[in-house]
Image 1 (cartoon, rainbow, N blue to C red):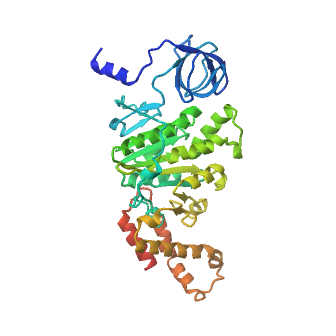
Image 2 (tube, rainbow, N blue to C red; image 1 turned 135 degrees about the vertical axis):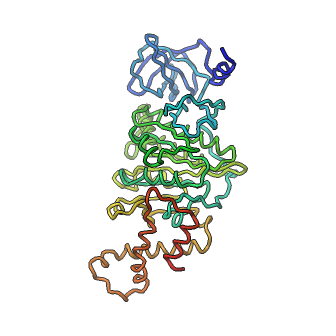
Image 3 (spheres, one colour; image 1 turned 90 degrees about the vertical axis):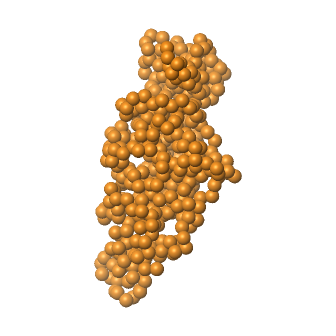
Length: 436
């Protein structure tokens, strides 16, 4: 055996212990075991004695006579009496520069048929957020190349934003525009709980097949609820690896709703009480554990995060949307009404906000953005009167001015998915429109 093979086996921390427990009960989502003394969160290896089927699982509940294990795969094929071994690996994944340009599962196994990924460094997937007093002030712009965001909802380096939209409104297209046009040198994308068809479609159509300096972590809807839940944490750990090395990272996750649904499945199977829309309390407490790990850290790099939230029935009072909005530093709302008018990306600038915008832009930019929103708001308020011809020109000079700028403002909000606009160019266009 070569020295490299020995190093690889040691790096994987293979458990050589013969101590094992046995399966005593199986249901649709969980396996009960006895004979081991694990801790909550321990990783175990479930092995069938009648076949070569093996699965990794996590200890999610302890009781006097044993423990409850949630498998990362599925329970089909296991029987009462099958063996469960403790694993030394714990909740950690291999990371390194070799992940760039690859599509992987939450365990960093390749899904793109480009060969093995040789990463030797192991990091935990459950890590504490950046301590509050070690967070750097967000005082730099983070350009995403989308005019309506850069000009009217300016992001800061290290900010956390949510993209809220119903199904089929254009979240994936906007995600692709941000990833392609951003200035961040490293990009980590987590596709959690989405349809398998969307993964190659997102890569080829939205990213143009270019995965330069990009890592895509995939846990599709056919994966187990545990795989979908921890896929998000694994992707965040990859982003933290690069942040700790001084890099500015763009982290993008689609979607928070599927992530919360995975925890809903796990929580209800363990007997947690359902609350609003069936979500157990653990689903809501899990969101800040993930989202607060993004940010800017003194002496290191930053993670600027965009989390998409699927708003069922376009209801912004959905519990996951409401909880996410309270945690994040801003929200970008996509409007189905704007798509009816052919405006893409359909960002509703009046219902959206960036909480750090005023800290990262100039006074002139702030005045221009405020005037643009005011004029746009006046058009929306008087839209019906204007369309039926009830408004007479000359009654309100400011409204007359807004009407004269209507087409220019709509063109500013519109943007072709293949088009990227530099930040300074966006600011100049905004200044020309409002005439300040």
